[in-house]
Length: 114
Length: 115
Image (tube, rainbow over all chains, first blue to last red; front, side, top):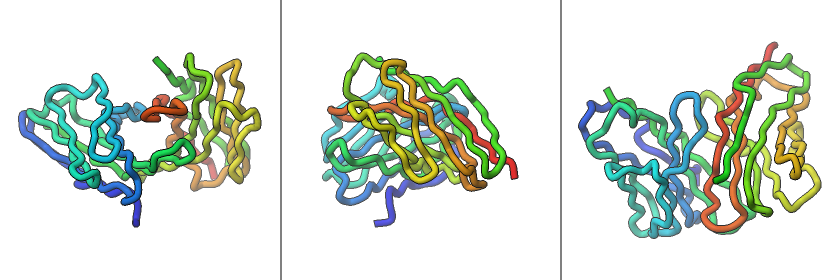
């Protein structure tokens, strides 16, 4: 395992287009998280999966956002009808269940909406 | 709701010297975790050090140590013998000790190492 993998690294899209990001967690990690980081800010929690179940969504996750984790493996985050305010770094992290284990973060996907 | 505050947007330190980054937090929980994460220009967030709130002993990882003051809700990071590779954004973060353990981050401190 080489860690948490996120693709693409960069995405430039026109306002109104749909985009999809992918996260491949460490294989034995059953918990997967999505965070959004805007310039000059710390990451903000978006949503969380335990296996294939999406257990919590932040109020930041508007109706235009949807996340899935089929079969409890990789996860996708889709943004429909992108807006300029969606421009940010989208970070994925995974961890095993249990309080003694820390997070492993991916390198993120940088989204620019023009 | 839990909040994490980092009041130093930028800090600088001479190579080989010691620097302390500040963090305060607010929570009504009695059991929780606190973290310091490092985010270099390559962007991947890396765990520096972790502290369990129920442990009175301050965590230490090589050149990195924390000063955890539970009553004051303060959690500072001390970096000793600063190295050029320590240059990065440093984020303080909080999570509950149970449930989904999502992280709440501060706004970060940019640390510059002066050769």
